[in-house]
Amino acid sequence: MVQSLRELSPKQRSAALASYLGWTLDAFDFFILVFIMEDIAKEFGTGLKAVTYAIFLTLAARPIGALAFGAAADRFGRRPVLMINILAFSLLEFASGLAPTLGSFLMLRALFGIAMGGEWGVGASLIMETIPPRARGAVSGILQAGYPSGYLLASVAYFALYGLIGWRGMFFAGALPALLVVYIRGKVEESPAFLARATVRQDSGIKGLLRGNAKLFLYAVLLMTAFNFLSHGTQDLYPAFLSLQHHFPPRLVGLIATGYNIGAILGGVFLGAVSERIGRCRGILIAALGALCVIPLWAYGTSPLMLASGAFLMQFAVQGAWGIVPAHLNELSPHNMRGTFPGFVYQTGNLLASANATLQAWIAEANGGNYAFALSLVTAIVALALAGLTFSGIEARGVKFHGGPENPEDG
Image (tube, rainbow, N blue to C red; front, side):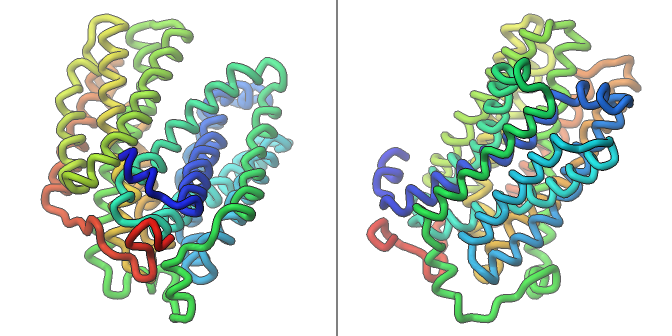
């Protein structure tokens, strides 16, 4: 992994850094909300449940952004659309801190979801088309590690800044990612694969996406639905499980959460790189089965140390599988739709899995508040589904992107 990263040219490293930071800061802006929902509810005189609709609207709107920004990236280029995208979610994050009513706040979070939905696909296509094929696995893991990195960054910002600036100030701080545009404008060049196709007419929108690719699109959406169920199914209610079922204090819950986010980052980087040797499907299959094996320790550990260890290993496996996704989806993507296809299927799968928290909470309540059972049941089912989809699926590891570099010198 280290060798493949060292071989990247300065321009390729700049593109990799920009794509990683874009996803990190996008996730940072998203996760700020989860720390301050109770304050927002008090501000607008409502219950916590009403504020949770902000998360649902953000998730539900992400496929719209993936399609719109992805189509624009396929037509006008990855670099300018990525800059516009980052400015959009940064400004909408800032505006969320100015919302005078709950209704306006929810509307702004829906618009933020559109902008958030566009960033991953555009950033992933930019970097995957810029680097040589043999570096895709390592860079894929680093790129996807941006998501838990953003979660960690939001946790640190909340710890350090909330007492000084309050909940509205947290959203104002979320506008800082706009500064990344200055770096992209000065250091990052357009994808060579896009430039090679710039004179060729590009399809766009749903019609262009499905033309001749319907089976691939359906398979990728099912794959990403399983991926998102596994991710949300092992993360979203785990802090509540620790608090409600084990009665752990907030500081202990936060410490365990920090630990499993570190596991997520390490897993994504490690398995992303390993997939370059063993293959994308094999890497995902190993991670899915690994998550299945960790369930007893993760859900039924009898001490804080056992649960923390299980959570670390679970997220190492789950986000390890995710670390392969950017390379895998970009390699499967039709050449003329790489700005649209990966991001749209990812976010469509995210939409289909958006009811996960509600489903797990319902199962727990129907079983006397047994969150361990609810988390285990859903995780086991989706881990097996992901393993089955991957085992029967296809991959295109090392495929040449038309116009993209084959060796570091080409970049």
